[in-house]
Each structure stands twice: as C-alpha cells, then as structure tokens.
Amino acid sequence: MAGPNILWPDRHAILLGTLAAKGLSASHIACELNTELGTSYSRNAVIGKIKRLRVSWNSGNVFCGNRNMARRVSKPRVRSVSAPKAWTAPRIRPPKEVTEVACAAIVPKMIRCEDLGEANCRWPYDSGKHSPTFLFCGHDKPCQQSYCAPHEQMSVGLGTKSEREANRV
Image 1 (cartoon, rainbow, N blue to C red):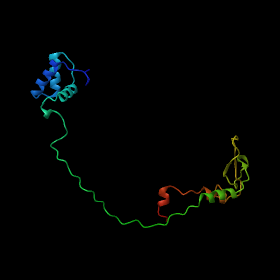
Image 2 (cartoon, rainbow, N blue to C red):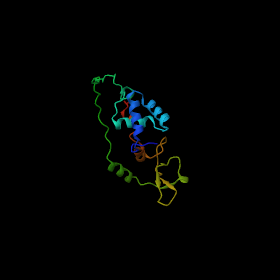
Image 3 (cartoon, helix red, strand yellow):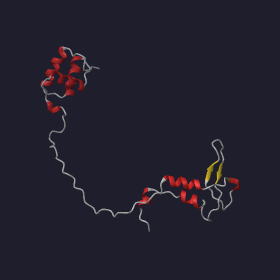
C-alpha cells in the first residue's frame, strides 16, 4: 500500500501525467498504471499524487460538490403569534423546615408489623442501622386511609408536572 510519503518512481509519475492529460478518470488511470507497471495503486492514491504533482487534469471527473446547484438564501422564519396564556397564581409550597418540623412533632408509638391493627397508622420508621425490621407509627387513622392525619398530609406530594398544570374541575 502506497502512502503519501512513498516516492513514486519517475517513470510512474511521467505515465501518470500522460494519462491525466488524456482526461481519464482516476479509476481508469489507476487501472492503466497497475496493468502496465504491475503496481497496485488505488484511485485515491492516483488523485493524491495528481494533486501533489499539480498536473493539469480533467477536473470534471473529480467530485467537488454540486456546482450546478445555486446557493439558496434561506428566508427568515416567521412565527405565528398566539394569545398569551392566562396567568395563574403559583402554588405555594411549604418550606422544607416546616415539613421537618411537622415530622418532628409526631411521636410514633413504634409498633411492630405483627402488632398493627386495622385502625393503626402504617407510616414506617427504621428501627436502627443494623436491624432489618421496620417499626410503624401506630396512631389511630381514619377508616379509608393508611396513615394518621399528620402522616397523610406528608404523604401527599405535588404530583407530576402535568397533574400540577392541569385545570382543576
């Protein structure tokens, strides 16, 4: 394989210039060189050597982009103007300190899972770093809920973005 630093013998360069002057394509020149000289020059090697030798060549066979295509000037985009959205008051979120204080105000009964009844709050508490068991709040809760009133308020999140932005009915 011939690289850019490989010197072409003078005989090869002269034959290359002769074939290029005839207006042959690079692949035809490579084929002629290879059959006549017993070499293995590629089309790209021929193009590179022609450019380095600055041999005049039928440049119609070299792809230099589509010259026939005129350069189009892009038109500025006009965006349609829509009516502004109605302003809605932002939802007020309690500060993080308020949430932490609300959790600190709840003193859990620390009931084990086996001891939980139907009316007990099921808010889990970690019993310790090395203990695999969880203890639960255990305060009385309303019938259809899983948590007592303070834990129920903490369990309700802000919802997803689409839920927050949806019109309330």
